[in-house]
Length: 69
Image (cartoon, rainbow, N blue to C red; front, side, top):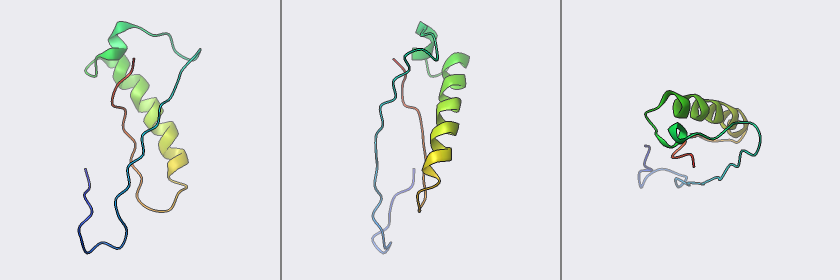
């Protein structure tokens, strides 16, 4: 986690995104477990896809998957 210091020019801004998968993946209970291989596989794909878009925005960007349900 990066925290903006008072002397930084720009404030740290957080955004939350909700992503719905309707047909691209089949849900299974293991996707709710962040330690499962299935969760890691899907979250890595989501992070890669979103980061490739977010990096077009000036500044430092970071994407993380918090949960899948």
